[in-house]
Length: 364
Image 1 (spheres, one colour):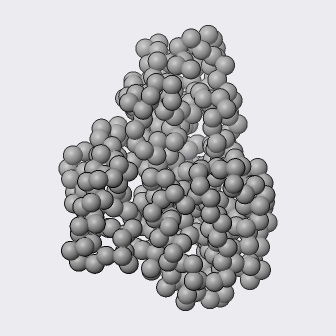
Image 2 (cartoon, rainbow, N blue to C red):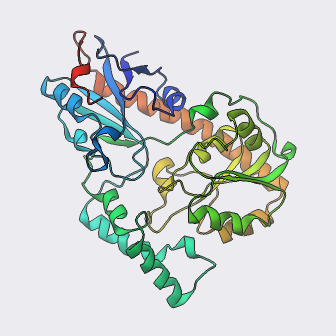
Image 3 (tube, rainbow, N blue to C red):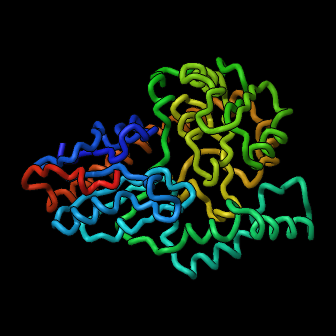
């Protein structure tokens, strides 16, 4: 294979299996060397050692390679807060970036347009406020909270991303789930629960989702605090629950609309349910990731409740078959897109010789 897939942060990557699957290549840990006849593709994320104000994506190493005329690509993960220093994107040697957590290409005009639009998408307050109270709640949301504030929104749009270099990489499933995922799943009629949710309930969106949907039965709800908590189910138990559930509501992650839960539901043959937008991301998030898709998408959890209340086994079976076929096609086409993109770049940028002793240029 012409690429060399390298993890610059040994021991910290939670999506090895997903990245290996979609890039059709195993990941190796960085040992200070690059291999002749390959195009290096580094898995990077913000360096915790340098602090929140300068999470540099190993800028020391990458700038050195660029200065030496060595080309490379990046797989940028974990930038959910949009607070990583993305200076590496603009290096001459950086030819392509695949990144988690979709980020608009940016610009002040786009930021202003979406900031204005965001006042029309106050989903976490649907069912609690109306009229002036709704507007007041939205203003409060922007002015007095960190994650939903203007600072977070600004980080999504500025600086402007290098057009043509950046491709969205779906978040995928965690290694904990991937190690136990099975090729065969239950049919809709065999599934025990209409819907289920097992996860961290530390944000308002998830609390509102559970409060709204709890009366839709049969369901299974298991709540705990903290990502990958010790209280969470094992990979085997989590797979079993997803495989026994017809629908999986997918509230937003810690900050972004994106969540591993959606991809784990798809892998288990369940039907994920999503919200299109949030106040701090006032665009159809998953359409940006997938383009057209058949995943049920709504404007509020109240709409989701109405959907679940009126769903039948027959309608669910039909929707499930459509989504399974779409997801299989999506992954295949995405793998083909990755390969064709990297082939076009690698033709001119394969390493001529082995390169060693690069660990001294690595921030870690």
